[in-house]
Length: 422
Ligand code: ASP
Ligand code: MG
Image (cartoon, rainbow, N blue to C red; front, side, top):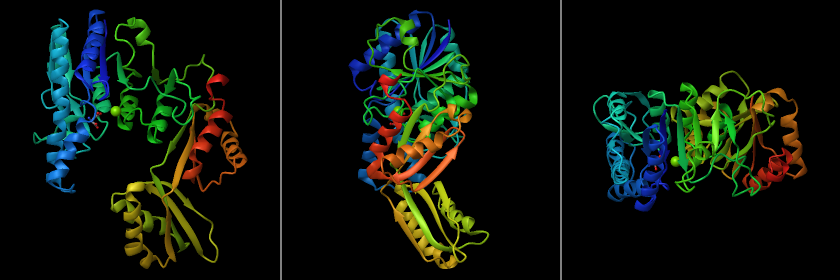
């Protein structure tokens, strides 16, 4: 008998019929002798609907008072889900009880709409489990030190589930979703993409941060920090498939490299079209320049990703970096108003039609020449590389957005990730 956490996404909770299916699946696990904690999302579309109502009354504002109410409103989506699932489980003949984040409680800081979990009290939940009940806890939310309801940011139920699994030292946290696992790349772009049976935690972290949207990145960070065994699997398999088959399906996120396993050099190709490139031209090449440019950007709470500084000619250089596309206009304005005049730079130019394509794999650590193979593949396709960044287990390039699909397909094939190559 083990303590298991299941997380169900919005699509899996999308209708009463689907909720009944979730209940039957959970009941199967419970009857097999496991202690079950279930963390569902709001029914699909519900969080958007709720936040939309708020915007109808007042356009979004950046005040804390407004953000607090958004959390008050959005948190109700998950509250409905847990109550419905508890009723469905009771209808299956199980004892089930639901809790909101503040009832557990799941304590967070006070950053409304993007709060971070600080601690989880497992006493109440443990007592229920020991009494033979299935416990259902709202995803996405918690309570701050002053008793205000908070939410963890969009997609935050993944993080709730992993955090609860960590706090309760669960044997495994299973994330049931509308895809059947983590793929070598997005199958909508490369139909030959393969499901990975395992992926290392570090690779998953890169894939998630590079735009593969299977898991909220914070949940992966949490799993890494507390070593929570995590599995991503489909909620659309029939609920009555044999439990041991289900328990092995999907993609397992692992922590130790399996020595016996033939490790692919590259495990996946990630891409991200949410970035934009900005270049400050003709900046004087002297100490403190990067700080002056990026310091101003950081002060405005804008995250910078890839950074590139060229060699200088006649004491002047160009300084480029990428930001999220939503921050593009704001960053350009800020640089024009506050930075360029002080720096004596020539001008600021930008390009929002770029994308970042990355190869990811822990196998890269022990294999030289992986990056150069990537560059050769891109050059054979006639794709110009604008920026490059590398880490131990990934190489990313910034290219023109219109070549994204071509680049992803070519790389997927070149690194032997296509299905038939396996
Ligand atoms: N319902 C929330 C959202 O849509 C949280 C989640 O589903 O993970 O972002
Ligand atoms: Mg999600």
